[in-house]
Image 1 (cartoon, rainbow, N blue to C red):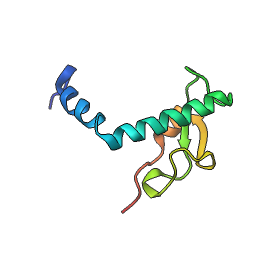
Image 2: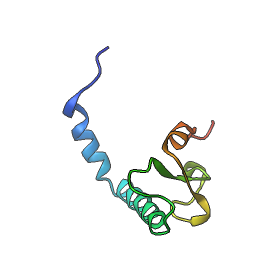
Image 3: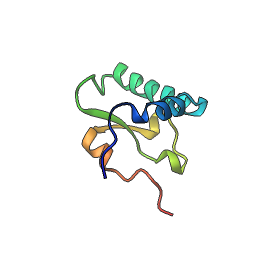
Image 4: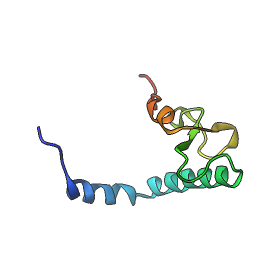
Length: 85
C-alpha cells in the first residue's frame, strides 16, 4: 500500500473545509485560541493548545471559557476525542 502524496486530497479538503458548518467550527476554534492569547495563557509557537474539557461530540461548548483549558500539544492530541459507542 502506498501513501498518498501531494495534492491527491486537495480537492476533497477544499470542498470539505468550505462547508458552512466546518467554517463555523474553525472560526470558533480560532476565536477561543485568540481569547487565550489575549489573556496570556498561550503564545504562538509555545507548543500549547487550547483543549475542550468536555468533548464537543458529547455536547461541550466551543467557546465557553469553563470548557477551555491550555495543555501541551502532545497531551491534547493523545486524548481520545471520540465518544465510545
